[in-house]
Length: 492
Image (cartoon, rainbow, N blue to C red; front, side):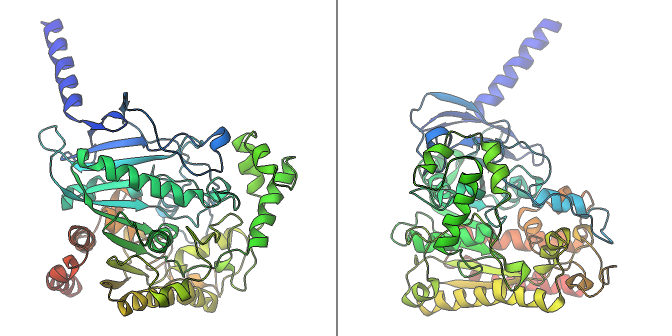
C-alpha cells in the first residue's frame, strides 16, 4: 500500500511539473506554483544571455544559443555584483525600518556572482497549467542609482500583481556598478544593453508564458525609471514595447559624469589592480577575480555635488549617443523619443529615504537641500518630460504618490536628529510606492496592511494593469472609477 501511494505521489508531482513546463527557443523551462498566490505560476532565475564572464565581462550581452536545455526555474539566480549601502543605525527607527530598507536596497544577504543575468516570470495558471491567453506583460527594471539592485527580494515578487490583475509580470537582473557601466568600449553601458536583450528574449518567448508580445510595457523605479526613459530615446525606431512607466526617475533626473571623470574612475580601479591606465587595461581586467574588482570599485570616489543627495556614483551610465545621450533637453524639444504612451511621476517626499545613506556617511542633509533634491531630481524632471511628450502628441499621465502607511514608516516626524530633513518623518519616501504596485507591503514589513492600504494597492495595481492592457486609453477609461475609489478612501 505504501509503495502504491508513493508511486502515485511521484506521478502526480511529475504531472504537475510537466504542465508547468514551457517550450522556449532555448529549451524547456519548468516552473512551479507560487507559494504566495496559488493561482499564479512562477519561473525564477531564467537565463536570457550567455554568462558575462571572462572575455564577455564589461562587454555587450550575447544571445543564448541552442534549444535543448531543460531548465528547472525553481530559484532566483545570484545577484549581480554590487555594493549596497549596508545597515543604517538611525535614531528613532521604527521596528520594521531596517527590514524594509534591506529588502529594498539589496542588503538582505543574498548571494552575488557574475552569472547573474536572469529574469523571473509570474503568470496566472489554470489547474496546474500556464493559462493560455494573450495577457499584457509588465517588465520591471529595479533601481539603485545603477550601483546596486537585485530581483531576489519580497519587494519585487510579482505573484500578487499577476494574480490580482490577470497579467504577466517579469523582473530582470541586469549588471550595475563597474560591471554594468565601466564607461569605455562597446560595453560602456552594458547594464542597459542587458535590459534590451531581456526584452528581446521575451518578445520571442513570452507567448509560451501566456503573455502577448505586442502588449509589453517596461516599468522601473529610480534608476529603473531612468532606464525606461533612456530606452525611449535609444530605441525610438524599434522600441519593441507598447508602453513606458517611470517611477521616481527619468532621463532628466540626474546628471551624468563627464567623459574625463568616467575614464578617471575606470583607471582608478585598473591601476589599483595592476592593469595600468591604457587601452590594454580592459583585457587585463577580464582576467581578475570579480570580488577584487568590486572591492577596488567601491573605493572610487563619487563626483562632488553642491547637494549631497545629487552626487553621481563613480560607475554610472555615460553618454555614447546610442544608449545614453548628452543632451536630453534638445532631444525632447525635437521629439527624439519613441512615440509611446508614458506614465511617469514621483513620490511626495523622496528625500525621506535618501537622507539615510547620507546619515551613515556622517553627512548633514538640511531641509532646504532635501526640498531642492526633490524638485531638481524628481518633481521638475517629471513635469518637463510629461510636457515634452504632450507637446509631440504622446499620450502621457503624470502622477504623484502621497502614501504614508504605518507598516512602511521608517521613522516618525520630529525624530531625534534636529535640523535635518528627517524632522518631517519618512513620509512618502523613495521606493515606498513599489509595495503598492507589487502588493507586497505586508510581506516586506511583516505587519498586516490597513484596509485603506489594501484599497490603495488595489487602485495602483489596477492603474498599472489598465495602462498595460491599453497604453493609449486604458487609464482614461479607468479614471472615473479610480477617482471614486480614492474619494472613498479619503472619506474613511
